[in-house]
Length: 216
Image 1 (cartoon, rainbow, N blue to C red):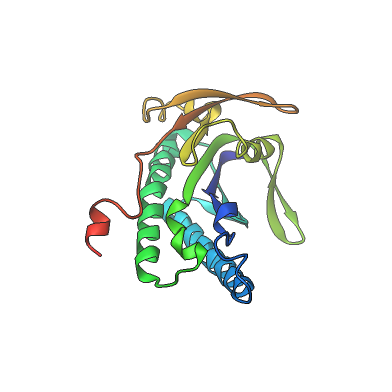
Image 2 (cartoon, rainbow, N blue to C red; image 1 turned 45 degrees about the horizontal axis):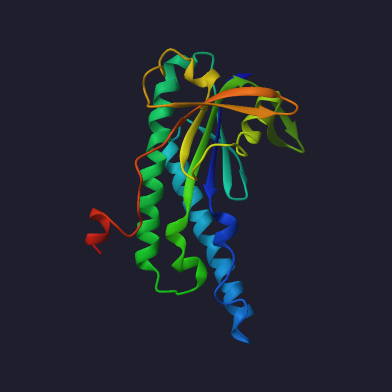
């Protein structure tokens, strides 16, 4: 099979689930830490659902991977849908931050999780190529070298915590060329070698600033 491999990853999750401010407070520290971690899981689940909805029905959710979600689109005519996927990927950033606005202003909890919600960011990895579709214990699984490549690109040398990273195989599709402002990078992997990628940095969003904050 061939198609698009998309990974949407919430940045800052590890810091998010820690209760730095309360971990040393006697008696109450453990309680608030557990509450903060529980709220973090709820918020991240909500945000992952928001990202999936923003991508639309054209993509298939393959699996949730902790603070990330793997999606795919199988196609024999990639040029016909590539630009639409790019548009959807650009749309995840405002949808993500709008949802953080909504969550931040409807919660009165002062736990570490809820007070630091605005520090979360999202990054997207988008790749096009061949991969295997198989079943394991009745569950669909995607496999192959290009699937491995897409996941390893999550650990890259790109600066920042919020961006859209597209592989050269994706960008070379005719309908995608010139659609975004892109910066070229080359990622090295000891097993897969070099992978040329292109990075798009969306307009900065802030949870507590701008026109949305004024309406609350």
